[in-house]
Amino acid sequence: MGEKEFHDKTTVFSFFFSILVVWAHSYNGELFLGKTPQGKTVLEIESVFGDRIGQIAVPGFFLLSAYLFYRNFGWNKLFPKWRSRLQSVLLPYFLWNGIYYLGYVIGSRLPLISKAMGKGKIPVAPDIFFDALLNYRYLHTFWYMKQLILMIMLAPLFYLFLKQIWSGLLFLTLIFFWIWTARDVFPYLNEDAMFYYSSGAFLALHGRQLEKPAGRKRFLAGIILTGIALGNLYLTNQYFLPGTTVAYRLLMILGLWLLAGDKLPFGVRPWMACNFFLYAVHFAVIRLINKSFALVLPPVFVVSLLLYLLMPAVVVGVSYGLSLILRQWAPGLWRALNGGR
Picture 1 (cartoon, rainbow, N blue to C red):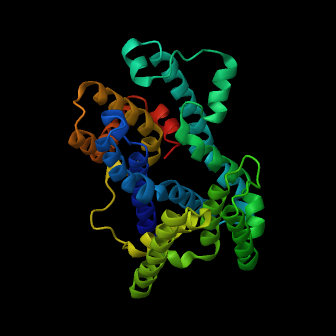
Picture 2: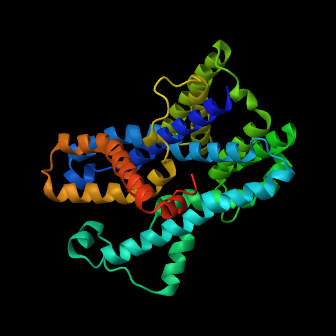
């Protein structure tokens, strides 16, 4: 697989994960139908997309982010990698947290928007503002970004363990053990996130065969991994074991990567290439659409479910339209908000 094919494939997978994130945050059964049998049925259907399929999305982001950071990594690459992440991760994290706080402050003072938001009047104070910047108070989906920032800061420490195969496998095994026993060992760090990120780093350092041209062996390996992943999903649904949950997510992502071809028949479309921007705006777009439509549309089963299924297309359309406007009229702001991508 050449460089172009590899980067095209990572773009398409990031887009796929973005679609799953939208479904994971678009539940609307109770909002439209209340706590009724119909509302429960809608939620059960939506959970297939949001809870089962959709739960590989953020782990996929961690895997891809780590893989790209540690690909061709060495000590001489550490500071250049850190510098690039200042623009692509840290700056957008603060900008988007500030924008969402400002949006909530303004929206909470506008009658119609405030009713849809349902948060009351958001106070304006320096301590609340800085708390929003640092701790994603008004952009809850950015918990992923904060964890990613912490992982990037710890990159030298991870590299010490992961640069050798056996020490890397031991490191991953210990993290998996802590997850299985449901112990919160590391302060401020999410053990699941660390496992996915470390797995991506390990694969970048020792598993570059993932980038080899597609063939029968790779396809067979993809089928096997996907099958084992589904077995872990079954165990998770039956017994809710933390270890089988992370195993399902990790193995499903790897299985899908191996099953996917190197040259995608439809190519990479422009609206697939602004996934970070889509991730940043999707939460506000979903809440606004769901709550606004619930106020004006009849509480009908089909309406609720159809809106849920179409939500990814709506969010992609809105985010891509906004990206075109920003690129045309405020290119500097666009680069900052999209992390220079």
